[in-house]
Image (tube, rainbow, N blue to C red; front, top):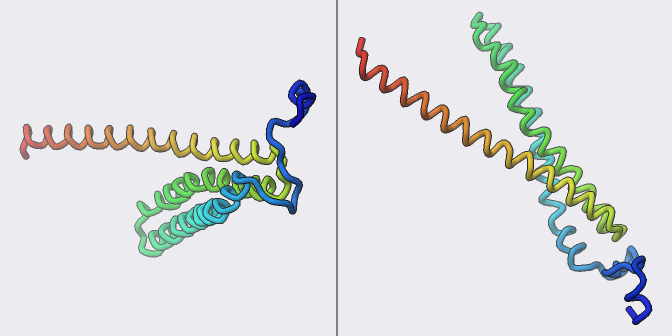
Length: 154
């Protein structure tokens, strides 16, 4: 940048090379990260499908053996599968935005990638908190049941 460009607010602070030219360090790092992001996304979608199939198979097996209590798996496993859909979707968007940014160098694609990444981590963070709270509640309930059983033996 020369002296005149420093006063121009429309001159980008960082010059991104056009596509097909030397990639920036950020582009190279994201390009190296993309296969892992895409792999985890596909794995998450696969787990969703597997959990749905497991729920249907368990319910079918339960009906065949005349144990209707196994029908809960028809609901439970697909619901657990939903936990994989959202982070997988965010990771897929992240991978797609990385691809777009690496090929174009446009800052909007980088921003889209970071938004998708933020959505992924927000979802994972919320579920980590929910999991911790449910674990604490489960332990508390187990302790209460154990204490009640110890105080009132049958």
